Amino acid sequence: MLSLKRLMLLLLCACSNLLAHAQIGDYLNAEDFYARTKQVNQFIRRFNGEETLRGQRLLPTDRNYHGDRLRKRFLPQLIDQQNKQVADQLQAFGERVLDANDPQFLDFYNPNWFAEVRTMVDYQGKQMPMTFFLTLEEVNGGWKWVIDRINFAPYDKLFNMNHAPKKFLNPMSHELYFMPLEKAMNHPENLEDYIQKGYQPNTLTVFLADMKRGLLKFERVSQVNLHFFQVKGWYFQVSEINRAGKNAGWLMTNLVQADQPTKEKLKAYIQEQE
View 1 (cartoon, rainbow, N blue to C red):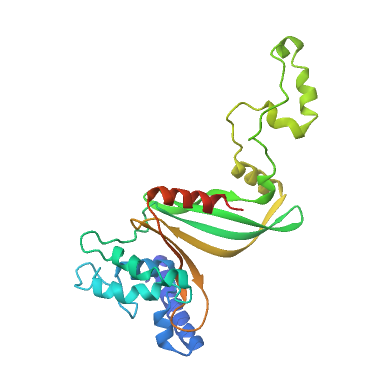
View 2: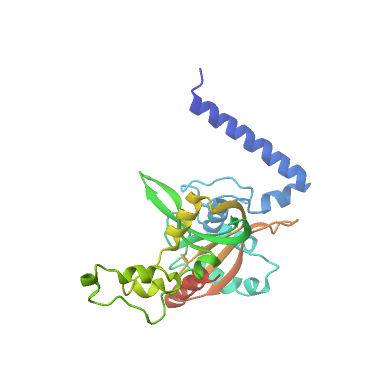
């Protein structure tokens, strides 16, 4: 008698096979289906040369595993060839990635990449965009995606911590039973003036509170971008491109030569833009 776990695995494999055949039928071209990079994990495997051109996984003992010849074949398929900025950088990028003395590979568990997830939310009855930034976190011997920060326009305008305070509580307020505090609290527009120096509000806390109070409701994911900083001297973005033909799926949509200081500036720019 099959265990429940084994039965679920068999059902999952059967569903995957049915989906694959359905997709091939939809594209009406098996070559296009095999060529497109259908998953992010497949992008990483192809970048590293860990599967064949037909999508068969390679074992580390296989002579083609991490082989330059295979990786050279894959690299042009992993960029958005219709994006001139990316296409123009491919040769220099390829030379760095395939450097015989220091070849570059991607690692799913390397912390130098993160996900940018653009979404739509309902905020107090109004449809608005919100961007989540997620990173991988190790837990109980496994890994999970966790929300690291968010960008949300109403929260950006909620606090004003970067100005010189003009209002204050008199140092003798304690002798007045802190009665001046009542006056201060009646003017919320000046609340930041009464907060200790150096404090920075955590918008994730505001997000959690609004979700729990029902002021904010998640609607849908509208776009996913993955930002990789793992290759020495380079940064690239991976996004899903849905179109006919072989050059489709998860592809590099931005490719920039960048030293470490430039990478730090790029990270800040990506995470702080509205």
